[in-house]
Length: 202
Image 1 (cartoon, rainbow, N blue to C red):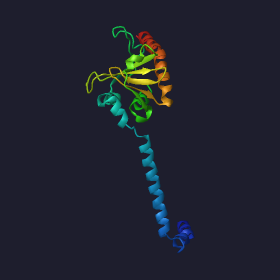
Image 2: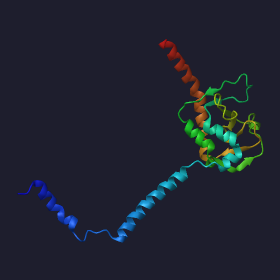
Image 3: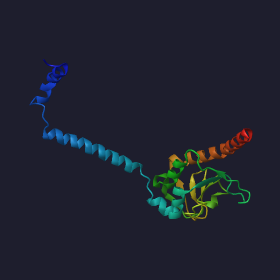
Image 4: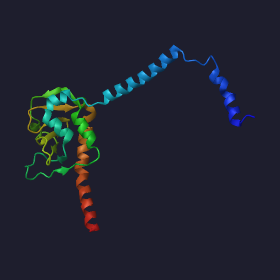
């Protein structure tokens, strides 16, 4: 007497014993090719998205690049033409979007390298609306503070104490200024509301 399980196994046994169901060399090679194609595509995708640092390192210098990568504190100075004693930096540390900001500043593709000028970015403070990003590492002190001035009107950028400037690529020329202006407009309000809530809770 056979069990239902045996009947079920026998019913499909011919599929596994069919001499026509064999692995051909062509089929194996095709399968291997598909796998290798998938691995190659994934590797190419990773390579394409990888941050490129060759030209940006040459322009910014290794210490500023390290500041972009590792800064524990990031502040925004919305009126860099003011005396340092009167400036009120906005603390950006921990805000959403800072990872994208770091990547933008680091990646070669964020800039038009043919536009580099041997002219201090500070010369634009009286000509355009500008803001300064301040990168620091106050506790570990792994690098000197780095301050970067951004021309919000035309998308020029450079080290505050440097003698060169470069223009942002077109896709970032409006996006970065818009991001910084939005922070400058809403961050003080957000801080005020947070402090008010803390006061109420106490």
